[in-house]
Image (cartoon, rainbow, N blue to C red; front, top):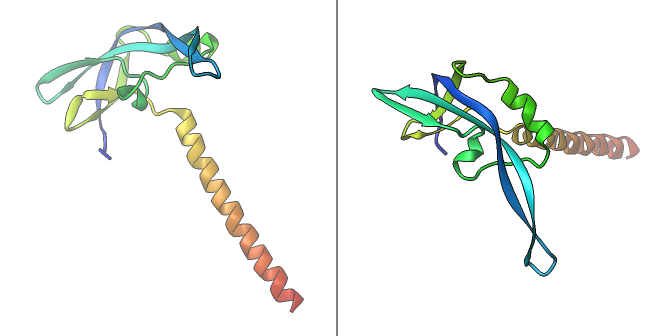
Length: 136
């Protein structure tokens, strides 16, 4: 996995983007379109002597556009950005046109859940060992 580097950039535009998601029925056929929202924050940054523009808000947007069903969840994210604002841009040093502004909060949350789960398993294992040692 590539270690992304950071550089300074600035916001060119910030708005709520609107897309569509296809819902599939149980038979696998497309049944309906659902309106989805995403932060459409366009930013510019320089790597070496070349200027780049991108609108990937989250790291995962480089592979697929992350969209959220509730507009109310996107509005506060977009409200944090205005034209001309300075931002930290994370970019792939091997493909500088691949960049993002944030990691997904859910990804960080999942890592914490894994750590808590592993910690709980270890705790229970130690508690059982102590219990059985005291019984013998």
